[in-house]
Length: 350
Image 1 (cartoon, rainbow, N blue to C red):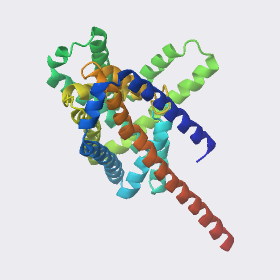
Image 2: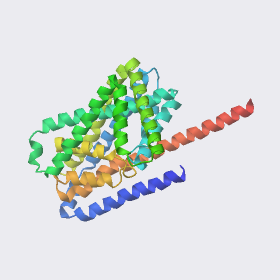
Image 3: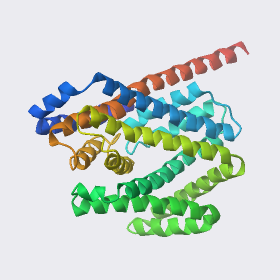
Image 4: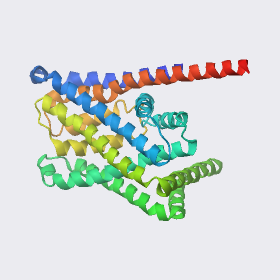
């Protein structure tokens, strides 16, 4: 592990710990103690088990998508690359550090670089589709019950704007399948608006990068439309399982703290939080996650358990991820070092 990684680990964990301590300080009272006494270790084990099963679903998604393109990648290798991805995702803004790890590990499993990139890009697309469908279904099922929570108008507005934004993204994706040039023009217009105060040379470089990313996207899409349709379908199914299980963890913790499951409200809240966490604000979403989940869940669960609830949620979905991710990353580093030494030995023998 290099010094840069160590620095970001301490920054990410430090920010998260600071916010968690502040949250516990302002919400801890006698009711908190009662909730902790009633909290069963079985609930914590169940929540952690659900998280691990969700990660296996992620690994299965990668495996079936790779298989549909003609590659046989071992399940253990997929699980290890998912775990290693969690480590960098936990110490980089917007969890963006995980993508290069997944591409690299697929490449090491003899998947061509272009195909590995296609798999990782399509993972994000499938996430977007599930977010759009999940948001629509949850809001429909929730119906008037969401209004009974007495949310401030601004929160309701954010909920619907978030969902509509995801839907628009999915629709644009579907539209761009048949009209790649129109997508390029749209991205250029949007980029031009956002970069109108930049220097011309910088704008041109950025435009070239946007065009390149659009080309990569269509290259990836073409791979799956041509020979990986089954992989996309199975990948979508495993993506749905993954996010369903991840969102279920919060309800399990709420049951353990005596707050009831709040399934529908929780699923909508988790959808919003997941999207917020993708915005590159802090390493691993540290601070942002704590503020987001405490603000949203504080609207329909007791203030006394907010701090403990957020702490347990972050232990399972953040600190645990960094722990297993670090172990997997070290295994990869050990393998790479061993591979390098083996290549050097072979070169000497020749």
